[in-house]
Structures are given as C-alpha cells and as structure tokens.
Length: 219
Ligand code: AP5
Image (cartoon, rainbow, N blue to C red; front, side, top):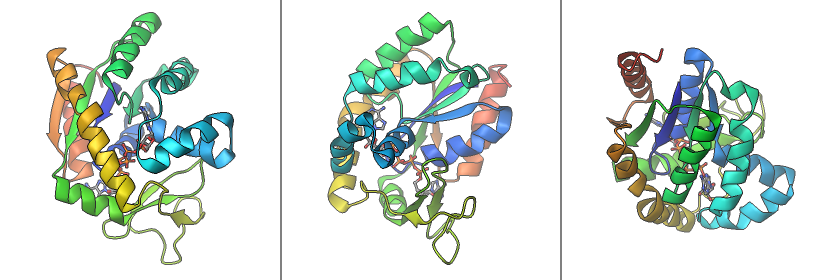
C-alpha cells in the first residue's frame, strides 16, 4: 500500500501505522520518529530540529523534503509505505506530488483519522514512548501500558514522556495542526484521494483501511 495518514497530534497515526506494517510489508515512515532519533543521536539535523519540536512548531519544509526525498528512494519503499506525520503543510504536499511523479509512484489514498478533541488531549497526556530510537514503540498508561517497571515490552528500554508533551507544547501543536495541516484534508479530498475515518479504535481503523484498499484493488 502507498498511503498517507493524516490526523491531529495524538489522533493515533503512529499506532495505526505500526499495526498496518504487519499487513503487507509496507514500511512506516514517521518524520517525527526520524527527527526524534536525530535529536537523540545529536546529528546536525537533530540540533537544527530540536528547538522547533520542543516548542511544538513545525520543522522547516526544506529540511523535511530533504529527509523524505532520500527516504522514499530507499529500496524498502518499493513494497509500499505508510506516511505518518508527512506531509504536514500544503507546500510539503505539493512537493510530495512532484517527488512521487519523478519516482513513478501512485498514491493509493490519504486517510484522515478523525478523533474528538477531548479524546486527543487525554491520549497525549497519557502517552509514553520507548526511548530506544530504533524502537520508539508507543504506549498509553490507560489503554496500553508498558511493563510495571516502566520499560518497553518489545526491547526492554525505559519508556518516557516526549519533550513536546508539556501543556504549552501540546496546545501549540494543536494550533499548528489547525493552521497548517488541517487544510490538507480538502487538498486530498479535491484530488479524490481522501478517506475520512472516525478513529476511536485503532484495530477497527486498520480493518476499515484494509477494506478501502481491497475496494481499490490494492491488497
Ligand atoms: P510527530 O511525531 O509526527 O507528532 P504528532 O503529529 O504531533 O503526532 P503524535 O506522534 O503526537 O501522535 P499520533 O497521531 O502518532 O498518535 P499516537 O499513535 O502516538 O511530530 C513531532 C514533531 O516533529 C512535530 O511537532 C514537528 O515539530 C516535527 N515534525 C514531524 N513531522 C514533520 C513534518 N512533516 N513537517 C514539519 N515538522 C514535522 O497515539 C497517541 C496516544 O494515544 C498513545 O498513547 C496511544 O497509545 C494512544 N492511542 C492511540 N490510538 C488509541 C485508541 N484507539 N484507543 C486508545 N488509545 C489510543
């Protein structure tokens, strides 16, 4: 599959993307995970991105497009990809369209995970993330807790709250989403690529995406 997952911070993009990778070998590409790994490793990219991320602002489009052009050219993307957290702005969506044309790749759909705001706020304050940059498994102290010792069930590393999970940063991320990212819903609707899913259960959402892909003849 070659899909985009749209949705507000905390809508469950990462959770749904990880479940979908088991389906047909498509890879999850999360710009947030790539940036967090770069911050942890202290690379030039990480140093440049950290201040934007901690405030809940978007990293500049030019930096993101450099990362994504290189990533989408990697061999493992040939089986398919699930874009999680990208594109995030209209210029990124336009640049992605040009890039896919250059790579001769056709997008199957853009899925908008629609989640009520009160549910989102609750999910963001109760999320925990594996601190190992190669794992970054997602937990939730209410719906999917890590081990009682606070470690990752997959790799055993400590699970943490992200640096952008302060109240100020969360409010800024939601505002940035409304201003810059929500317009992508009509961008993809106009192109006939949008599927809107009321996403309260990640498992049900995955099933619905698979159903849409089957109708499009993709699976
Ligand atoms: P990024 O990592 O993409 O953050 P985000 O979009 O804010 O999304 P989140 O990761 O917060 O949420 P999610 O939708 O993946 O939800 P999750 O599955 O974790 O980006 C971080 C920063 O990087 C940005 O602010 C920006 O600075 C920068 N950046 C990244 N991409 C960029 C780009 N393209 N351009 C510019 N800058 C960029 O779920 C949330 C919680 O809810 C978890 O605890 C989970 O367990 C729980 N949960 C999920 N689904 C359910 C469910 N159905 N029921 C119960 N609990 C659930």
